[in-house]
Length: 277
Ligand SMILES: NC(=O)c1ccc[n+]([C@@H]2O[C@H](COP(=O)([O-])OP(=O)(O)OC[C@H]3O[C@@H](n4cnc5c(N)ncnc54)[C@H](O)[C@@H]3O)[C@@H](O)[C@H]2O)c1
Image 1: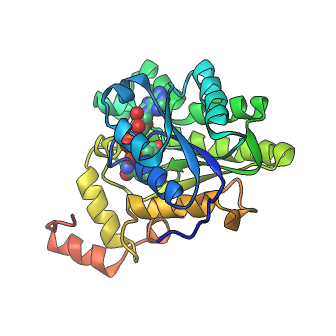
Image 2: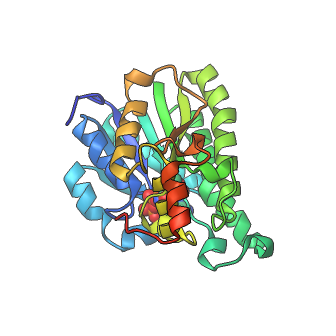
Image 3: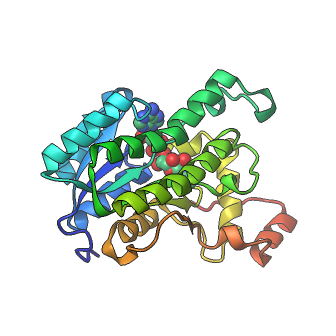
């Protein structure tokens, strides 16, 4: 159901790769709520060709950009303001990649060149995005900037590897930049900490199926899916969350506050996995 919560707002969505991407669902939902948007991803992601369908569906211009490049980011904000006809009201950072995870390097055998890439792509790009936007004065007063994160920033999850460090940095940047952006321009900055979700990035994490299953059993409301995450993003981009900033907001069915549930304990005792798909 649409409520017109983003009527007249202009947004930029980073990180829609394919139909499974959380950013894909967010793009669809924000447009349903009345926003106009641009879409951006790396030239390599665009070559896969799937984004064209989303662009057509949402009426969005696609702007190729590597989110670690300041020059590319300037282009994204400039071209988005031109295409949408004014300053930007909301931005979604839905970007994550770890070469160490991809190449199956264990956490006690990291390649440090890869680690730098993980941090640059998955966390520092968020700082770069905001620094560029603020210098260009590209985000309207009251604007809302969101990044997606995971509870491995606070607690240890085997298999999440150096992405945990990237997410900790991402959440720290959210607080540090959120302070300055709020003070100087009235722009709010938050992260949403999402349940494990089946996507291309999510599937790269070792033991993802088991992790999703465990989280489902532990969370009183069950795992949050990508569509539900998109709903929460709409709320955070809307004027209904005007005074929320510098927060890490858990969107995980209660997982992050749990210790043990009867369902998870029973499953553990039973010692076998059900199919939760
Ligand atoms: N899937 C999950 O379980 C889960 C849980 C919590 C948080 N998240 C976070 O959600 C976000 C979106 O991930 P997803 O699960 O939708 O997977 P996804 O693979 O669909 O999205 C990741 C995106 O990052 C983009 N990307 C990679 N390098 C880039 C670069 N240099 N510049 C610009 N874009 C780049 C990819 O092209 C891709 O579109 C990530 O930050 C991820 O860590 C995912």
